[in-house]
Image (cartoon, rainbow, N blue to C red; front, side, top):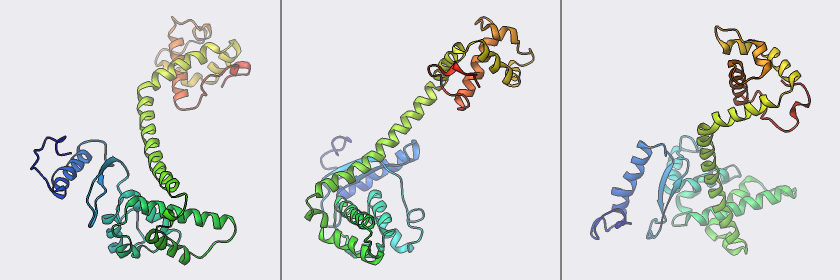
Length: 277
């Protein structure tokens, strides 16, 4: 990693110095100067454990003020300091099922994130199954389950441990994928919406028969006149549907606006077998 970032063999040969002087400032600069406010770089190191891997991505930034409102400030700060955002979410969900976060101070030291997440998910599955079977236990019991599951690694003893880890991983990946899909769709919508809706507006207009077009013009005359400006919207020119008349362009623009606002559905086959809106 030092080589990829242009440093010599002796520069920042202690990982903690490389992390403090290079990685963390880089994350701060990216969050400050770009739109990637959720960008993170994490490592798998910890107290008494050497860091061997880095991973980066985009996750929400959580802190004691928004994720652990009903938790003491001291414990909330400890959770935020000790655990990754993904584990913080798992802890917060477990709290709704009886988990007492004060135990994290001395129970979860040096336990990898994936073990915590897999075991929390394992207990959540137990809770869900028992509630479905009509045999739920008290929150106090389930709270102890979370502690014992992590410290004894119940999920590892279960034949579905790898499946649990994979499901937890896929849940995280799915959130990230959905976020990226949404961002891509939003970019595409901005770039293509005008052309997309205009094309469909033309199809919508061209598909109308005389009666449908007459009804449409009469029911929307106020809006069409407003769009026409000082020169009144000419009904005869519009009903002729000749493309060299400005009324045709006004109709297209008017329908485009209505489609963008979802006030007119996109054209489908045989939609004009009845009167248009």
